[in-house]
Length: 260
Ligand code: MG
Image (cartoon, rainbow, N blue to C red; front, side, top):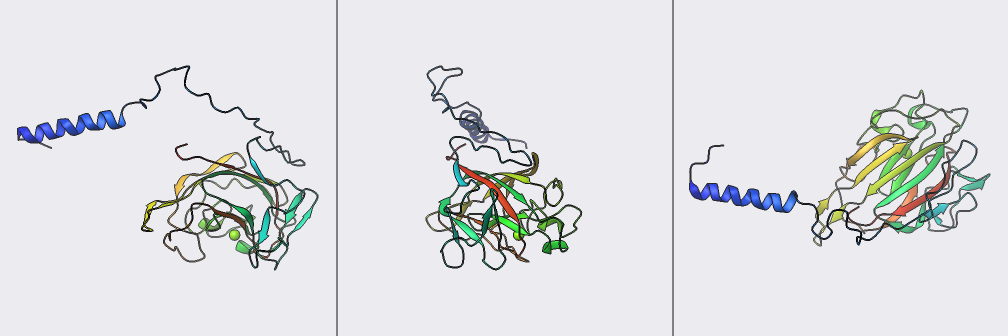
């Protein structure tokens, strides 16, 4: 770009100065290494799971399922008690009882959930160990037996269903416990209902990054990509009954504040 006039030059200089002061400076509130800056809250980080034993959640987590009961969950179809089976420290989809959702609503979260598809495997494609983790009841991280099981890439395990395949297929064999750690940022809507910021999801499957701060195009759906529609800042977390006896254990969530 060739700048020919003095006013234009001044304008560019002013814009540059504005940009530098606005974007290039560290936050003004605290100086570097300021010992008066508030210390982060101390929490107990919990423990990792083993194949036989779920780990312990961090001390500041909201535990949604600790292997004992579904008291924090409701049936999608009538809001009554969740009809899934609970035994041996896990919950299991009971075909036909429908999806379940948390009583409590959540927005921005770190979610930990472990899942296990049936062994020996049964069925092919989408009919093999299908379930799903629905952030805000609208945005599905697919659960599927994707170990040696071909399906459309944006529908395999850890896909943002119908939108984005995982970066790699890091699934374990059917019958093994697998772990999702999901960082989800809810979409933001203006007072007029217009989308201000899309939802974003980071998914780590079995310790492997498979969705990297991915922006969603809207709610997930089968053979459709519906646009965003304004909704509440917090909505229940859902799990899908797709007819397969998929198991879940060690479900906990940490609510994230704005700006983290
Ligand atoms: Mg599903």
